[in-house]
Length: 159
Ligand code: ATP
Ligand code: MG
Image 1 (cartoon, helix red, strand yellow):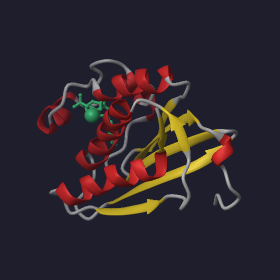
Image 2: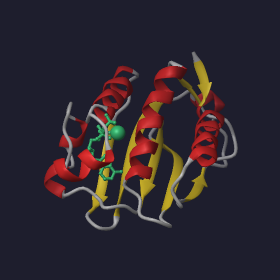
Image 3: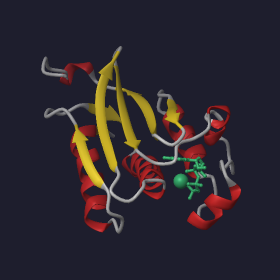
Image 4: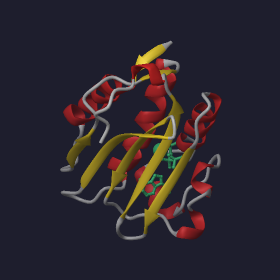
């Protein structure tokens, strides 16, 4: 179905903001008009839930998590950035593989199966988008994904 990604994203961020136990600051950089994407709502929820819970899981006390939506080349790009431990350069493409976890000891403590991002990748690609990561060890991580969107809903105040 067609979903306004902006209000959808806002509602998911609201839910995390209300239930988070960590002392982490949320910073939303979202456009203030609708952007429609054709995607299954439950699947989009699953993708965002995993990316946001990863960001919280690896955030330091008092860290900031930044949520963005941008338009690039006819695609809408959603991202979640944290100021956490980061991912070593040589591992960055592997995080989307099934069961892959960067540091076995560390991640065992934090829980999880290593399937979250593999599922996210599958879903994003099934909807004609891509998913990728940028990270600096000790500085933080950004996870991005793109989706084709309905340009007819586009207006001129994208930032
Ligand atoms: P699951 O999502 O199944 O509960 P998981 O979170 O370990 O388990 P993924 O979400 O697929 O699995 O992430 C794979 C691995 O990538 C993680 O174990 C972690 O090592 C690394 N990773 C993912 N997101 C981040 C992040 N924001 N900061 C640092 N490392 C990350
Ligand atoms: Mg995860």
